[in-house]
Structure formats: structure tokens, C-alpha cells
Image 1 (spheres, rainbow, N blue to C red):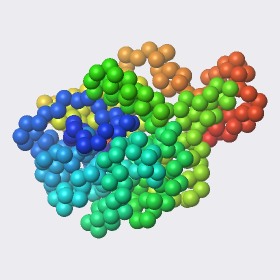
Image 2: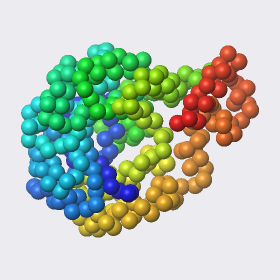
Image 3: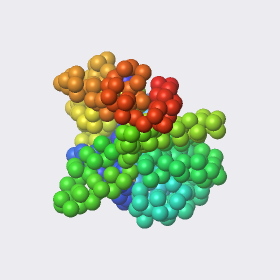
Image 4: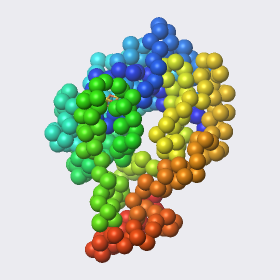
Length: 348
Ligand code: SF4
């Protein structure tokens, strides 16, 4: 059912500064008991699963109380944490699964993506994993697939496989969301330029003469194909333009907003669970779902650019959304690669 899974941005702060972070700008309500109130509304609703993220959720002082309220109501609770403070708080939490980040086994690469502080977590990852599993909590990993760590995916697999784990999601880097978050964060112009330059290093648009067979999406599809050969169903590649599941985001003021790749990076508020009630929100989400999660005020052109126009030529071959001039620009030596990628893309 639409709206069964709520992603709760329970924290606005974070103790890391990851370059690919796309923490949205929300209004945060730090009032005493505010999180507990929201947890009670979710507990009384049809929501089946709540993902707690942020910011860094372990920085929220009433996190344990929130997990207790939700667990008492039989909700499935997933915690997305950077792991920095997890040892201290884990015994108090009532959660069903915990997802930890890991992007590379190379310290310099990991440091560039998540900063120096994260290296302490990276070193303790096997210990954290066995502590989580020892508490009978499911364990997941999250990796952001970028231009600087794409070649490390097999080594990351070997690293996380030192322990049992339940799932590993590899997300294609979304530079639009990261750039938007950087702009929304404010700060001086020089800070923003430095941030955008760091984001730029993570994307890879590829080259036209190669038919963009060297862009980040191409590397993502080829790595996915390579990893599929392992036959490990716990591994899931999540492309930025994959068919969207209905993401319902909750902020600490009770607002629910939604986002899909069809909405072109925008999140819009559909209502407030405190004033409207969750049932009303769910009905509104269902209406939006029925019109394919698009915004009704977008033009056809905008929709085309969001869905097809910004794709490399090989992703548009099959539906004919390309010009012959575009194809003629591709050097002959790369045409086979164009066809291979076109097929791989069509299979997703
Ligand atoms: S990606 Fe997560 S851990 Fe990193 S800065 Fe953003 S909220 Fe914090």
C-alpha cells in the first residue's frame, strides 16, 4: 500500500560531512516530546515500516523512546546510521535492522568521500557487524557508487563478507541531490564552490566520442553485471533513475513530503500527520501515485528531460529518442559497447 513505508528525517545534525550527502533542508522541531508525539501517530497508523535517518539519528536524545513506541506497535524499524556512536546507544535501541555505510576499502578514497573521522568506523566495521548480529538485529550496508570508488566494489564485498550480513545496497551517486543539498546548506560562496568541486569529482559524464560508454551510469551497469555473477541475492544495485517506490519523507514537524526521480529533485509537502492524520496523507499519496508520482504542474518537455533527455545515447536507442547526428559522433570502435550497454539498460 502507498505510504506504508515512512522515511523519517529524525535528525538535522550530523557528526560527519560526507561529500555526497543529500540531507534535505527541513524545518526541525526540537521541542520536548515532539518526536514521541510523531512516533505515537505512526504507531496508530497503517504504516508498516519506519526508516530512521537524518542527519545522524544517534544524535537524537529520545531515539530509544521513539524506537520503543514504534516497536510496541509492531512496526518494522530500520536505522540508517554512520556508526560513529552506535556502540554507546545500541543496547537501548529496539530496531529490526541497522544499515552501515562502506564505500571503499582504500582509506584515501573512503576519507575523500566521508572525511577522516569515518576511518575509525571503517576500522571497526567487523566489530560493529558482529555486535549488531549478536543482538539479533539484521545488518545491512550502504555504498554510494561514484567516479572515485566504482572500481572498489569487489573488494568492498570481500570486506563485508567477513561477517554475515542481510543486504548490501549500492546506490548510483546522485549529483543533482548532492548539489541541491550543498546549495541549501548556505555558507559563503567560496565554501559552496569548494563543495561543488568536490561533488564534481564524484560524477562522470563520459565522452561523446565514446558514446558515453565511459560515464558513471555505464560503469554502474557493468559493475552490476559483474557482481551478479556472484549469485548473491543480498546485493542490490539501486540506480538513480530506477522505477521509484513511493518515498514518503517525514520531518520532525510532522510534514510528509514525497520525492521520486520523476519529480526532478524536488520534494513537496503533501500534508502534516499531526493536523491531517496519517490516513488523509495516505489518500493524498495514493492520488499522486496514481498519476505516476509526477508533479501535475510540469510541462511535457520538463518531464521528457527528467525521464529520458539526460540519459546517454545508448539508454535511448531502443525507444528511438536520439538523433542520427548524435550516433554519427560516436567513434566506430565504441559502437559495440554502445549496443551492449543499450541491452543492459533495457534489461533493468
Ligand atoms: S551522508 Fe549521512 S553520515 Fe554523511 S553527512 Fe549526510 S547524514 Fe551524515
